[in-house]
Length: 94
Image (tube, rainbow, N blue to C red):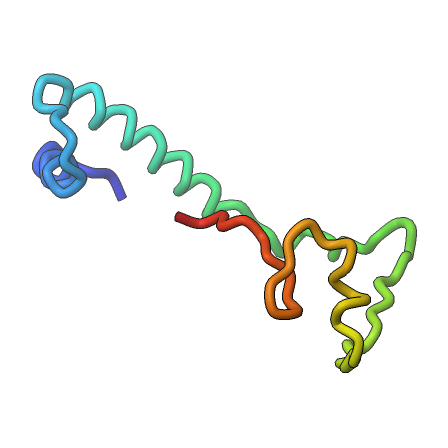
């Protein structure tokens, strides 16, 4: 599926990019990428052998067990910041 100039202009407007002077260049580049994607989809994956781990290691998962601790002061005494028996951590997401 290749894109024509009209579709490239529509995409540039929707993405608020001003490429009006370079439409032919971008049309060529985008269509090159789309041709490569078509080539990837054309690869026959049925000939591949299922991958197995050569080390034959297995993940060992333990069950999560909820524990209730009565002495919260003992748990939080080494924490840099503590409030009402809970750890206070810096805000990461704005």
